[in-house]
Image (cartoon, rainbow, N blue to C red; front, side, top):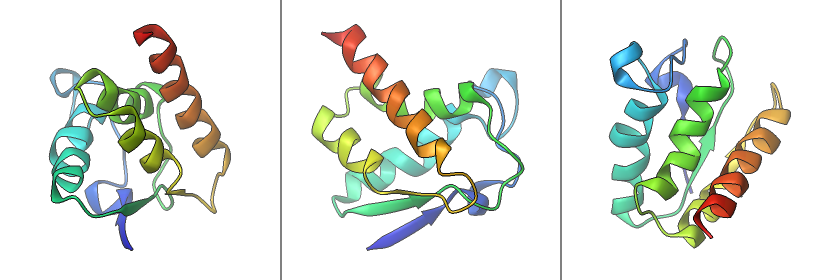
Length: 106
C-alpha cells in the first residue's frame, strides 16, 4: 500500500483555506488527497514528522472530503488508514471531524 507522508507536503501545516495562508488543509485535500482517491488505489497517510496541526487544517483536509462529494465509504477507508506514531490522538481527532460532518449531512 502506498503511504503519503504529510511531511512531504509540508513540515508546517497551515490554516483551513488557501486564502488564509500556505499549506492549508484545503490545498492538501485538493492537490494530494483527491488526486490519490481518483487514482483508485488504496493508500495510507502518515501524519508524523511535522511541527503540529491546527484543528482547522485537519477538519478541512479530511471532513472536507465529504463536503466535496467524496463517498462516505471512501472517506472512512482513508480514516482507517491513518498512521501516527508521534501523536495517535490525531487519528481520533480526524475521525471525530469526519463523524461530525457525517452527522451534519444526515
